[in-house]
Length: 248
Ligand code: NI
Image 1 (cartoon, rainbow, N blue to C red):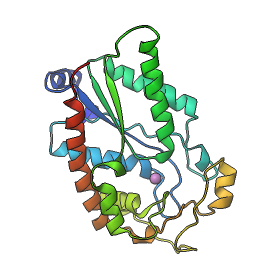
Image 2: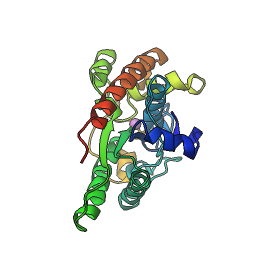
Image 3: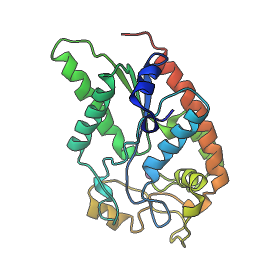
Image 4: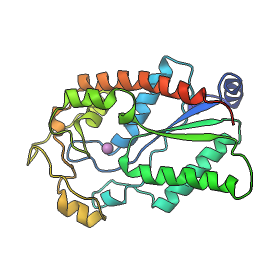
């Protein structure tokens, strides 16, 4: 069930069946010469939408702008500062928490978001701690590649040249969902260099085409479909376990 395609009476009725909600969260940022700018928000959205097509779970609108300051040297990247992102994540969670959702599950598609999402959770909880109140909801962060079995499958599909940015696994997922948007390029070198992440001009100098450690030429829609099916199934299980935690 998609929140954006529902009415408020339908959401009110859903709350009678479940108080868990999934929020796909990612980033709009460069993904090398062939990866779509939306890759990091598309992947969790694709997986969450696939999961809800076969299960009675609720998926909120995708939070599609993340903490991507290091990619701002490439046209098309849109980023929030950590402080802005943390504040926005808190407002999303508190909005849903105020309606009775007790389990707010962020399915993340961008490694650069992790520290700020964790900080957002701490800010949310701190608000209750400092006022001596119980938090009415709990938050969970899961990166889609950390869903049960997904990294193991990606390692079998891409034993070398997976890398950490503009990876063949994330590009394969978008190829499966958006076959009309598949791009091609000659990669030089075939496997991109790896190294640290600092500010945007340093990033562009170290990684001239935007990739980190990856060879996206290995991506295929078929491999992407395998990843999506497995991730969607694992998401349903992980969300059920989170929803089944004893109430606070
Ligand atoms: Ni990515």
